[in-house]
Image (cartoon, rainbow, N blue to C red; front, side, top):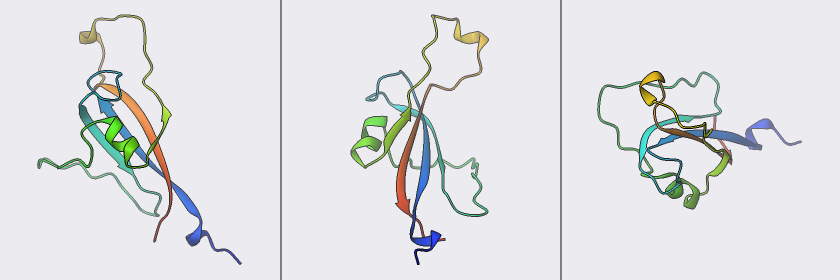
Length: 96
């Protein structure tokens, strides 16, 4: 019998880039792990991110599941957005 512990689970990576180009620098990053009780931690300390661009994450095995929504030109002073959001996933067996 196969247990759920040995089944691949979806890891999510939210990357916010300066532009909608996958080679653009990352300005924000949030990683979501598929384990019970996982919470995103916010820290005031400088954190070393694993990737400097969306392209680096793709090379490391992440797959883009959503590209940034590109609206008509707008004045960004009216919006509370941080960069262009890419959502990536990677299916892996995770030890709980």
